[in-house]
Image 1 (spheres, rainbow, N blue to C red):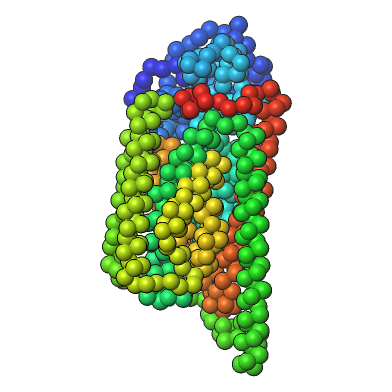
Image 2 (spheres, rainbow, N blue to C red):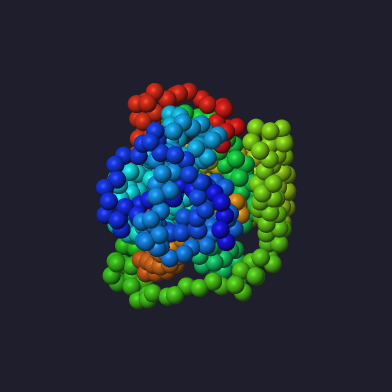
Length: 540
């Protein structure tokens, strides 16, 4: 079906130059006329070109709803109208509101003029800045298959390594995924965050499935995932993330970067010290055991362990769920409530928006209060007070959810998610490494699944990239979990989990700090406003 439209097709312009082997000078707006052409949807080097703009094109669940045809070089070489359209619009005036009509998809609106892009972040979402055959930098839709290069290879390898390390730590890895996508693939934040969330949820699903039937290493009658902790702290974590995101939008880069450096540096120090201390403690215990049993000090009987393929134990999970019905209902109810609130979110800065934020805070308080009553009733009946478990008292019932709010706020404010803060926090509160790994993984799953579903429904994801990278994350997470499980059984060192947490934090600290400091430098160089920007909340 043909449709009449003004289309900035770099496909025809670029391909015509290649097949005709013609020299094309700089585009000049003064010597060309605006042309309206009827064209079929085509491809540029097999990259789909959408008929309408990138903000107005038809999409279904993030997939472009376009038809493609084989590229015809003869038709392209004869078609001068599209080149004339590009000539007519290059250098033309534009505004923020009319940039798509005036500049099309191929150019970007800079300083009130339609100009060529410099980097991919200049283009719209899901578009990439590449040079045409004439040397002009133009924006074309991203396509992983046709634009595959060494950067994609390196990014895939680093994503796999990160996913395996994150699996050992029970974290999501978003603090590493996002910088990789920004630095290597040139994604904008709006493109990197949805893809990162899809990758995180892929790994989190594997983690939770492998942990759901595990028993606590010290108390076999309890699950390895501490559902009481999740029930008590997840509402506060979600509330904190929402507040943190709002503050992130209005805060200057220098404040965010400074807070990032301080937060991750302190978290890294705490985790590294705890991990090293645990390693030395385990070494002493293994040496004493070896001396007592007259065996090797390299793990003793653990050296006979072999790698085992670990799968989900759903019968055991069903048993744990039936033993914890109220926590399960409160956790599921909290997730569903937050999902519905985010799905029906009102426009930012509107009265309804602020009412929704206040309503969400109140609901989080209600879920936390309901969880507190369940925990106290159970603890009073069982009289449970054991090492390695979080102790619930009238004081901790108030303080621990408050800590979760702070962790969520920092995660949202710094753009690194709450899991990277919750893992070290739970260790500091006294949770043992194995339970911390599984419980943090459940926190990550709840938050990332909530965000991912929203991104998919809103069409913010790029399916090719999601399928490719998420598949690798799923496989790497499974391998990482299998490997860490083998090492824990063989060497009897749970400190490996804590050291993995420190490793992920260190990678996030280096990469996020580099990106943040670079943004601050550019802000200073171009004389940007270095103060708070409340208006950003209403323009996002």
